[in-house]
Image (cartoon, rainbow, N blue to C red; front, side):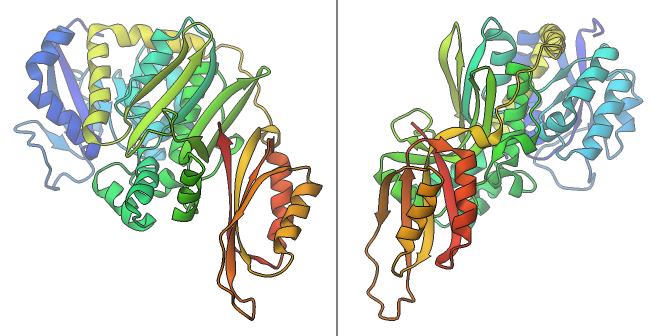
Length: 436
Ligand code: HSE
């Protein structure tokens, strides 16, 4: 980093987060200077569509659609890269590092997919990558794992890491609003990804969990090794039954050390309503992290949205300006070399489960399902079926909810394959673990 009193910044991307960053750079100029000791100058902006009307006025700052305006400008020290996607982003960040720029990014998909390669390049080029905003929006969890908790062996991470899906689950239950309407509102509020499928199918949370797991345990976990389910099939009925039983349904991301192996999953999960995770509502995120020395710590707050995410980006900018970021990045690079902890095979994950079936309202259906569960050594803890209309020709359907005792993911998958073959099954089969 040049010892220049001015810190010359390029902003690449001016969507939800980029706009928030520009707003803070403009509105908090003096306090940023006081906290960092340097005057922050936004020198260049790169966007896809230069002609687009924006929520922020760049005055005389050059706005281009060509990243070479940044890579070719020797006066730019730092690039704030807040563009989504993977392949272009990989190319852009590679070029930025190669041209001697340090990089701050909120792009978790990029870090998940190419973090190791980009970190290695940054190390070689003696550059720094900061990424606080990539995980859990405004919550300083990257900083906590990389600095405050480094004296600990991390025992478990249990988290809500996707604001959009938490917003949907909360609104559906609290206001009885349908899934599609709530998703549209999450998009309008700027919580959702450009492709909201990644929010609701668990991909976004899994990418973030993978980044946290790598930092906490040194283990790279590809998405295919994470037991992963989204919230798309969850119905209001599931949320109501869970609530009656004292639970909330949360898209829970878990990375846990069990007998020297890591259990990693992202699944809609029944969590006790009176636990901090169960009480985390709206677009908030929470990360409960247990260290062997610090014990259980909980970080919660806005996990998505323009200003919380921009706050995390700007915290990185200040860390960069003071020189702290470069020191932290070096220690992240050293940690990359630690011996990874092996993963627990998915089939061996052991939990209690909530199962919900929509079935033909006919004789022997419950017995058939119970038989399959029993033959797969799955013990039932409770069964619930509300009274159905007395239709003479048995054309009606019934909703059947079964809670199991502790069993393995493997046994449940086997049982589910058999249950799917029953002619009495109608529609989706829902399976959620229970985190007591
Ligand atoms: N789409 C993300 C979420 C934004 O809903 O959590 C923050 O990464």
